[in-house]
Image 1 (cartoon, rainbow, N blue to C red):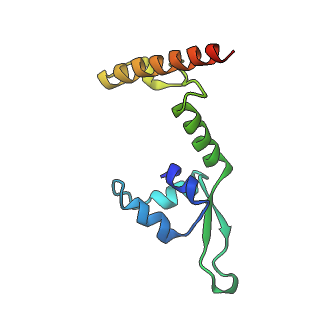
Image 2: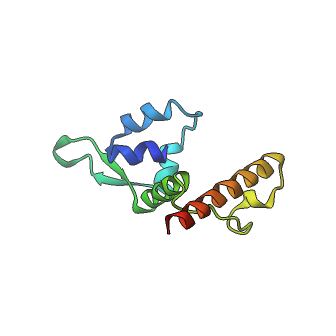
Image 3: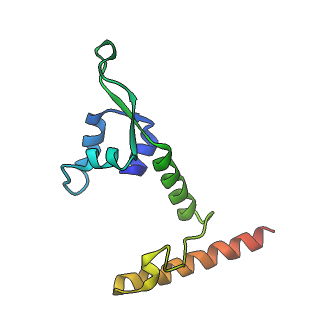
Amino acid sequence: MLLFLYDEKLFDKATFFSFANCMSWDRNRFSDMKKRELISVWREGKIAKHRELYQLSQKAKLICSHTYKKLVGQELISEDPYRNNIMKGTTYADKVYRNLIKKMNSKTTADSHNDK
């Protein structure tokens, strides 16, 4: 949801819920994102009878930015089990993801050395 809204810049509830329909049902998603300070009000709805508009908070924008950087290999994914629970490898899926993260990080590190 954050990555979709990141490209929207400003959005109303209708835009939010039209995309939310593509995801698993969560009646409280909008209010939860507001409570977690991922969405903030850009324009109050009472002004000149305009609808209320929202934007992603700085916190949410940073999450998106870091996610994009990790996906394109500009930033390493933490291999520290304290910061990344997947690295503990408690489930089979965690072990698979852990191996992929290590592979992605080694490629990112190798690419950064080749650029120098």
